[in-house]
Length: 336
Ligand code: SAM
Ligand code: DTB
Ligand code: SF4
Image (cartoon, rainbow, N blue to C red; front, side):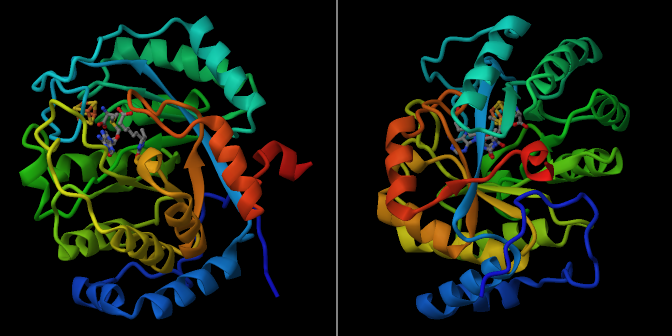
């Protein structure tokens, strides 16, 4: 018997049921389990909390592209690396609303807007708030990712009606300085606190395949699950090796190791929506199917992520049909 529940959990969490005291050795023991045992556990937990045949759809739009002062080694938008990316100023509201309406037509329930900033200025925020208001009027959930936020900026976003803020921890605290020098892990934790305290839903995850060890993957998941509240949404990105970035020539991460990471995220954060995020354009149908079995229940849909390619909408449609996966309905639809 499947106990299904909508893909949208309220912001409040049942603290008695969820753990926030994971240790790295314990999580490494999960990683070391036989693959079938791990996937069986993850899938069983997944079924207790979600409809296993339902996936939530988000669509991304880069609202301000390139020329970012940060030095994140994976990122095509950093000013430190020559990736041949055309920079663009903040997009006008009409263009953003047109993209949001197009995304809604394809079945997306959340529209995520990303800006290549270290942190927004208060004037930047005025303009983003206009975008949030306009996208909110389409009936979609809104998410933005704008870099670091102060506590008062987070409150302004909440007051403007924003639903989710995305800010990733990216990797373990130990591996982090190998990837990013221009802001610290604690800076990220501070922003997450501001977002949480403002009452926004938190979207927070990381990237795997950046040359980190299994212990680092365990360390990232420990940090995410030991936050005071599990992030409502947990994006697990597979590194897209963009030409011109320092991580361009890294080796492939073993694909079953990626599936294990998804499975363990599901076990540790059983109520969170786990998103199979960047990197799907390079994944086979079979790998994605294993990720959905392991507990992933959200994707980015649409031919572009922020700047990188995502699978063609049509091939995702075919994959969903082959797997018998349905798109989760919008909150407003499921409440009806
Ligand atoms: N500038 C803001 C920030 O970093 O907080 C928001 C946009 S940033 C592009 C959002 C996230 O995209 C990053 O935290 C990272 O996890 C992910 N990302 C960026 N480049 C990526 C890549 N090449 N492969 C996988 N994920 C990537
Ligand atoms: C997240 O964790 N992944 C998305 C979203 N949050 C903003 C971004 C992926 C970016 C991939 C590289 C690009 O498109 O530039
Ligand atoms: Fe800038 Fe965000 Fe890219 Fe880092 S990940 S370089 S902060 S756009």
